[in-house]
Image (cartoon, rainbow, N blue to C red; front, side, top):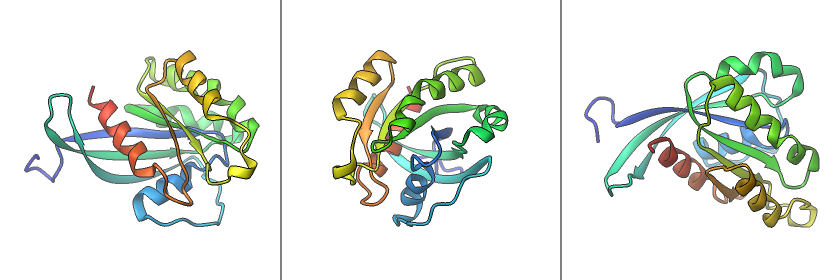
Length: 179
């Protein structure tokens, strides 16, 4: 670990996906280990910082400081979002597995990321709200096919409510930003 401030690497990452897919709830769960039922629309973006320890390809443990930008998903914020991508090294792309409308928008988010940055960064697809088993309409198989077809870096099923795979999502993203 670096002696300057307690981290070896600093990486800007973005949370992307349709409004209401659970981006803010997931970030809050990652930061505080708590869940809030309250839905508050993100206006523009929100910013959070947290460090994670990851193992590099050569087996060395390093500390990565993640600068997490939670970008507003609503269409009315399309005009402002592009500038928030600048400098991003990875993205968590969320969809709500109970709402097809959030699934249909996924290609738009990949395109927006590439257009804003001029390159492809590691993107991990997250099926969020998997705790709502009875209401699920997007299957694991559909998501895995999407990941393969779009050459994404990975896939996890998450729940901000239960905490399922929340830490793992950020750990994997930090790891992919080092490659």
